[in-house]
Image 1 (cartoon, helix red, strand yellow):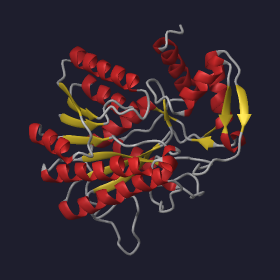
Image 2: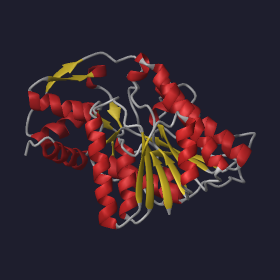
Image 3: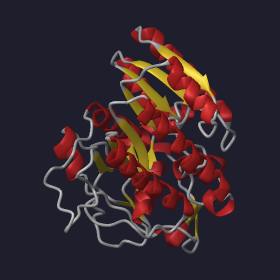
Length: 341
C-alpha cells in the first residue's frame, strides 16, 4: 500500500514509518521539523527512514512542510494517491499547552482540518489519527474505557485532541470517511522525545542531578513501549473503520457510531507507579537517582490505566512489553546515541 504518515520525523511517526517500510509499503512522510525540541534527533530519525527504505527496497518520499498551510497539504495530495493516511503530526506536551495554546490551535485544529478535507476530497479509504489518554481528564473510573464519556479534559492539549475525535466523527457521518482515533497511553522507548520524563530522568541521573517527581511520586502510568504502539497503529490502519449497525442513538456508545468511526485505547493495561518506573531506570543505568518530591502540577492527571479489550478484539493485538524490558532498551539506545557506551 501507499501510506501517508504525518509527523514522520516525530517519535511515534518515525517508528510507524519504519514499521511500514520494513514490511514493504510505500511511505510518504511529511513533517515541519520544528524546534519544539532539538531538531537534530528529528533529522537523525529521517536519515534512518531513508536507510530503512534502501534496505527494504520500499518507496519513500519526504516532504518538509507545515500542515497548517493548506497549500502544502493540497500539494501533497495532488502529487500522490494514498491507500491509507496515518495522521500523527501534532503539537504535543501537556505543560507547554499552558504556555502557548495558540501552537495547539495551529497544529491540532487548523492542520487537522486541512487533513480531514484532503482525505475527504481524495476519497481516502481510511484515516487513522493520534489521540491521547489525556482526554479522560478528571475521570477516575479505572480502567479508562472508550465506551465511557471523556468530556472533561484538564488541559488545552487534551481538549484539542478530544476535538479531533469529534471532528473526525462529523466527517465520517457527513462524507462516509472511515476514521479511527487511537488514544495513546504514556509512550516511551528509543528515539523518544527529549522533553519526556524518561529522557529527562536519564540525563539527570547520569549527570548526578536530582529528578523531579510530581504528586510526591504517587502518579501511576500505563507506560507503553513505542514498538507496541507502532504495531497497534499499523494494525488499526490496516483494518478500516466500518459502520456499527447495532449502534443505538438512545443509548449511544462513545467508542463507535452508526458512521464508520471508532476510538481505541492503546496502552499496556498494567499501570506502574512512577517510583517503580524510576527504579527500573536505576537498574538499567546501574546508578541511583537523587529524587526531589514536588506537589501535583496544574493539568496533571494522577493515574492512567487503559482498557485495551476493544483494540484486541478488533485487530488481534495488545501491547506486551514490560517496563523493565522497555526501559532497558531505551537506556541501551540512549548510551549508544550519545556515545556513552
